[in-house]
Image (cartoon, rainbow, N blue to C red; front, side):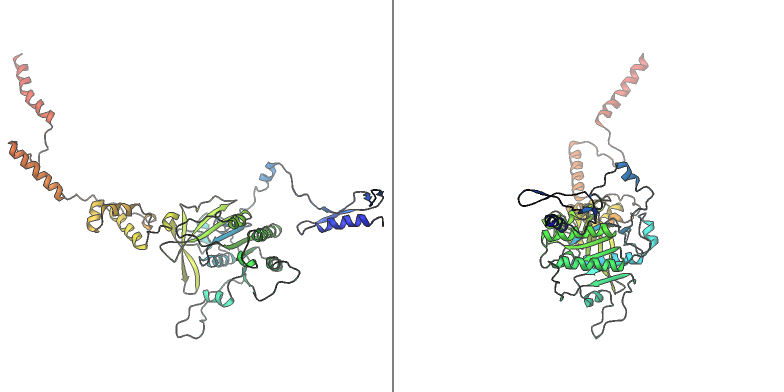
Length: 463
């Protein structure tokens, strides 16, 4: 009985152990055990719950900095938005194209050509990536894509040639994904095993098991909301993100998580701190970016970098890459790069494609030497409309400019002709001669000087 109390104490310490720590036996000598009456009983007990390593590692700051000298730079998996070895989160409304972008990025990584924002398009070749001057992964990587949203038919249809109206079967023409791009589909009909308290715990355990069995280092989860039993709550989101963060550190993973944001106003900018749940998710992420819709073009989306721990935020509200949704070669649903815009331009409720085309036309005419008044007359616009068109950010701003033309001489307006005619009538009534158009008018001070010159010459001659 003398060791019963010691066993109870050891059992309580054993229950506090977690999966993140490894414990070893540490001999700390005899431990006194207290009985119910307050007396001390001699007992031999060993504490086996001490961690193998300390929670913190203390080193001089100079040593931490010196550790990365000569180490290769981490590759860009999705430009500056998702860096190798980081946990990134992509926010977006339902139907904004998060899954399309994630599949396109995963396909590029598995092919060895990660996506970067290039001048004119997303780069799709290794040489194109290197020309951008951004480090990228040049070798194919195994990618695990956990699809918790689409069925196999819905996914395959996006990457198969769309059948004609009279066809009864799908076409054999489809996109050929690389073999190391592995898609994992979830069966929603399965019940949560009894040993798991929530659906999120069960799915995280299955995700971890699949990662360990395949040895993949790049993981995409589509989406975080589907890991929950119902509506994703703040506490559950914090648990899921913390577990993914621990998994990233333990296995050295690069993880991209897709998450939905609630419907917002068409004209409000993208932010990560408007809702409590988005702030909670962002707190565990190394990089946070969002995909938004263009107000005046339903096919156009834009990417906005909201937070980053390792890179500068280049794609802010004033410099956003716009990407257009299309089906490449008819069977690969993907995005193509359109250009850079400000978020204010993309969300302008009064802007349309016709307004952008008119702004381009006005800017071209102004560059060719026409005045704003000439442009207003020939295009049947008011001067105010011409001035507003010149202030609109349009695709013309990013195109090479033509050489300027010689200035066109301005034609006299009716108002100017009437004023000149009135001045001429006043001169005739006053008896003053008309001023010749070929001879410039003589200033008033100069005429007095000319009258005095003959008299001054006569005085000098007399002297």
